[in-house]
Amino acid sequence: MENVIELKHVDKSFGDFHLKNISMVVKKGYITGFIGGNGVGKSTTIKLIMNLLQPDSGSISIFGLNYKQYEKMIKQRIGFVFDENMFYEQLTLAEMKDIIRPSYINWDEKQFNHYVEQFELPLNKKIKSFSKGMMMKASLTIALSHHAELIIMDEPTSGLDPIFRRELLDILHHIMQDGDKTIFFSTHITTDLERIADYITFIHNGELIFTKKTYEIAEEYALVKGGMELLDRDTEQEFISIRKSNAGFEALTSNKARIEDIFGDLVLVERPTIEELMFYTKKGAK
Ligand SMILES: Nc1ncnc2c1ncn2[C@@H]1O[C@H](COP(=O)(O)OP(=O)(O)OP(=O)(O)O)[C@@H](O)[C@H]1O
Image (cartoon, rainbow, N blue to C red; front, side, top):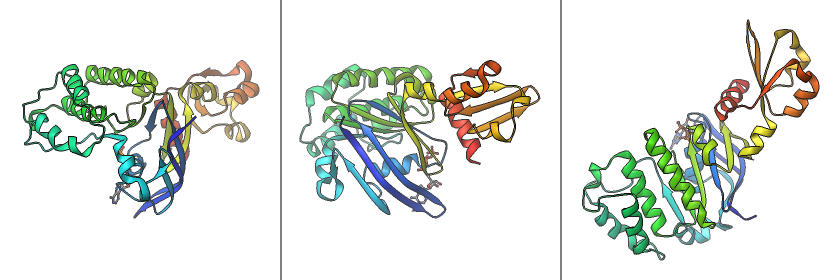
């Protein structure tokens, strides 16, 4: 399976913040969701992947190519969708398109018109009058009109209402039918991932926790609930983190099978949501 994005031992520091020894891959033909709490390094990683920042050490390759020699070639093949407005607000979408079009060898006017129609975007209204949802659709239209093979999105669903979020996820799902495309997107909204992500990459405090197939997470991780009498110094070591209360404990494990061996049916073993996974991992790291 081809890796569209590959980071090897990437480090990047800003003052107190360190992105530490990140090695990760994004596989071709899949949707990978990129999760982590506030300020853990998601945008920094995306900027490194886009060559908007350079790593202090380590290497980054996109489509197997490095930015030093092949920047132009790589950028032709990426569609970058920000959560911020990246257009000139005083222009209309038609005018903006005329500025962007010459930069792309593969620009496809028919495709542009197709998405403008599908997304019901006004061509002749100033972009400053666009809602956040319209802006997102415009951004995606541009990415799809130059036949980007890799679509990278930083928080595409933040600030969108639930109906539009769902619509956007459907659009992304539809884009994937093409087979050649790869989507990498960061989000805080974990239910979005449960809906469409094939892989999940999780970072915390500048460190990569894992990249896993979404369904594997449910197989390996478990939320375990039981009585306090089951916990002692040894059994506590089996968990990533534990929340204790008068009613008993609730804890996260990354080794569901082992917990089942140790506790049998003395505990309740449930499938964690991605939100619970993030919550307990953060707690465990403290
Ligand atoms: N250009 C910069 N100069 C200095 N510090 C920066 C710069 N960019 C990011 N940081 C710091 O690096 C850390 C990680 O930021 P980053 O934007 O990557 O996090 P994030 O995971 O995307 O967070 P959020 O989900 O809140 O957007 C933060 O502490 C931030 O303040």
